Length: 133
Image: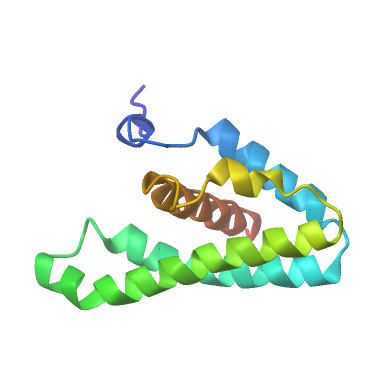
């Protein structure tokens, strides 16, 4: 059987599917029934869904289309990272660990962490899409 994740899994700071599932479960458990954390997560998913548009089309677009969309993609990615930070801050305010945020890493520490955060956002949208069935 062909492993469709071979290319991805060889990239720096790539997450495994098991790691992404574990991080998502941590987030859901920490959010629990907290309406403010749920609202922050909802905003995160809205931004992640917009980000997936750029990410999923990137390999399909020609150079000119990429140039036209690059600023929007970067801006959306920045907003996505901000929303992960907002959710983590919200959970920490409720005495939750939000250790998942540190596991994702920070772009200031390693530029590949920015991609890692984007990868995880794509995973969350993927799970959201399957659960909308």
